[in-house]
Image (cartoon, rainbow, N blue to C red; front, side):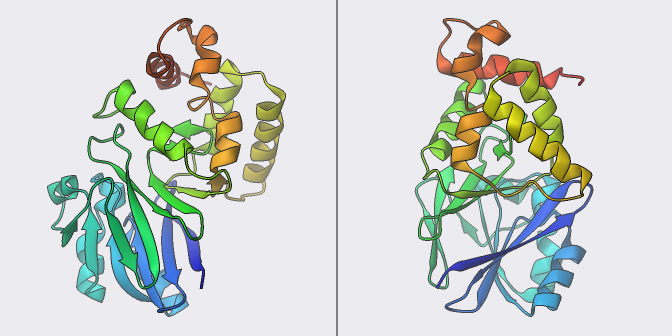
Length: 253
């Protein structure tokens, strides 16, 4: 039976995700941006929380762990860095697997935003929870890692099937689209940006996205193609990526 994903807004611009393994009736919470909102959604849905799956240690991703564990008794799974905020029950890293009932999540190393960041991929249903590594038309800031590390992480995600649904943790897409248009004037991006601006005007979420769509339009995945526009012609791919990321960091549009 397929994995069912319930998405809802949290905090100012985060999304909360609850994933239900329909075969077993067990649910997982991917990150814990806002404990109260997550617990309300669980109660509304009537789902039994079995796991918290943390992607990284930042407070808007793991800050609700303790309150949710106290309320549900669930098990916390995540990278070792999460212990900066709260205890975890099982430490995982790239190459590991986590079972939610009959759903198997592959753990993908995706450091760069933080050093130990990870993503979770359900190969049966083609669903990926990527935290703050990959966004719709964007990627996370390099708070701890290097351009080379983040480029490698993005390439691991880009290698997933094109129809993989990508659940990123923030609604940053309109801002990301404005930056993307400043470095890429391709027709595919222009068409997507228009759609995104219209969706946000209507208050609609732009998440999830897909791997195929991001490969076609995301300037960070397309960095080698755009290298000349950010002064990185002839540079290795990861340096071209770093130039695009640096341009986004100072973009004011």
